Picture: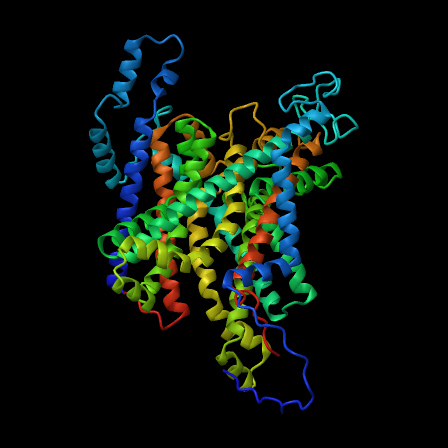
Length: 319
Length: 315
């Protein structure tokens, strides 16, 4: 167990290091006009050189990277080019928003997806199964921006027109303003992410449940006289969850960097929107910081997934 | 394992049995697929969509509206807003007074083209790397397996946006970026299969006949991993189409006047309250295409491996 954690953490750090190098090189080889943007139209070459010098952009690439790495290991991700704010502060402000978005959506899609999958699998070929299968296929095929715009049109615009101002058009209310405003601002973004993702889980858990329900030990459990509900949820679901957990780990990890679209549509100033803004401004420190945070999320999620395997299936040994 | 008791042989004279035809697994799969009405229906939809893409100029010719032509007088209301569907503009106009129908037809070229090309790139890279890693093992496997880990840990969308914005939007970069990040899952699937296949007797037989590693990999092992590869490929196309549309939606698709579904939806998002058709029709085109590909993918999976997903609990 300890060995497993150590090995996985080291591999994770290696992965993060590779990613940091890749992003660094990527933006260094790209023609940078940060100094031009900062200096404005009328800038003399001297001014631009001075700005480049101030930002440390005139030093050789390896020197810049080494400094970045040393600082990063001390928990300092540098300062953004435009307002000289520490990147850690920027990420610190955006992270809670993305986190609220991700956690809420993940809970909704997991519950909704797995429950629908189980219902489908325990009543195969019934009307309920068929309609759930079709519905999840439609949502599965739907790009999140289409769903997001649809949600805005019907649940914000049409509802507000008809005098029910239930949901705002976008923006974020921190949890400190109370749980009501927080939920109201997040519910449409949550649904947008959750409905698209829940579909995958319905398909996945349906297939997995069908496999498991055909196993001998399920027949044994039924033969012992256990109730249907107990067999389904205690015996079958537990082992049917393994592929679901894998997928959940991957999705949850990817979510931190993957909520770009939803944050954009609902104007939530989370990590995704911050990153897109930084990318358009070529604000390298911010981009690297966010990419690293997002990758860390993926790496952590993968380790958690492997831990969950051991919990769900005692045969799995962590080595 | 169930043992069935055979019924007592029937004494009546049976009509002569039809000749037994030996059918290969691929022919059997194709027969199963052809019997699948939903899959065949979606195949028809896909073919129609391909025809729309191929004959996009015909749409422009028949309506008389080139895809990038802006009709400021007929195509816009006096207030400068898009016009709803009417006899001239069947699906309405966009914010610049362009014909949405014609633009959707041209957009199909981008979506399907990128979808197919990027998927092909993904499949080739994934299969080759997966084969190499699984078959050669050792250092090669170690490097490729780590590479797979790295790629799967990258927050795809963020890095894709970064890459495209750095290099400037375009078709080639979109295809490359999608290929660069999607091969890993394919490689992982192939690698797993090959690790198992390489220990089988037919590989040993080929080797004892003097076949080289390369020959064994591509002639003997590859056909045996084609089934999961084909299934994964069909299911990958709609994902790639969505990713491409998403990049366009974020303004990283083709440069401005080009018609492309994601880009059209992005232009439409500021008008969704006043011009529903502007958002609806490109979205529908996109949705119909992805649904059709997903349905076909499900059908292909059922046909290639009839066991998966068809298990019905015996009761």
